[in-house]
Length: 326
Image (cartoon, rainbow, N blue to C red):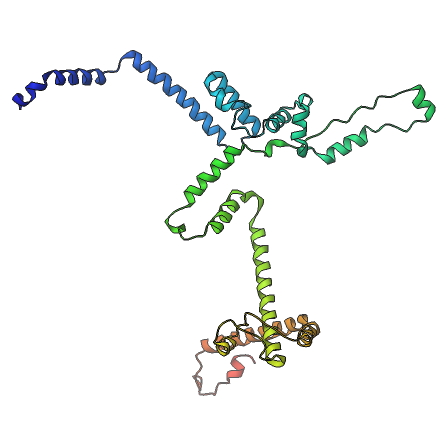
């Protein structure tokens, strides 16, 4: 082995020197690593702050300005007029409103955030600053300067940084996609993810109301389908067409034809029959039948639970009706 490595003695010496140098960190290198770790910790804290649920545009702007102060090279990416800011006037206007500096809004910024004006509060301010009615002589002798009512804006804290919302949404989507959701259609998956992202806009009561609506729609459709089948059976003819065969088989299964042609009189008779039916009366009748069926079922359960003999211990005959208290 020594003979084989003899030709590479110079390289082996350099490798050993390098390993010795790497084994012991120099003070200067240690200071550089410590400084780098401190910067990374600061940037990590900034990243976590931007991912907060209550991070507003003002918070993001203040964080970016602080980063630019400490790291001037970041101004090209985090400045107020960089390419990442799609609407600088809107962002600057919202930041000034959140800071309470509405008086410093420029005309461009005020126009960009005009949709955020609180019309009700502004109307109340204008009514409070209304000028009393003056006669012609009073207006000529005394000109009052009408103070313009200050424009009131809505609470803009509900506006979130776009990148913050998008990154959170994409992260949740990446986490939700797995082997169990490979077969779901993109449309259904998108709807589910947007419902998850906007979960604060709906509650379980909304879901229950929607389910009740779907049940009502299903019952109405079933009722309408039954009425159409009855009309076809009583008054219809063989005028309807089916794109394929097995017409009698489909009718036996209770399926409507794909294309249905009927006379106007048949349609009018069907509508008249539907209009003459008292559905409330039918529901009351159905409720009574269900109640009677439940009582009978309870009676049957009691009878099944009984263990009745022909005679009791004294030899007297037993009356089943008396035992059931009927």
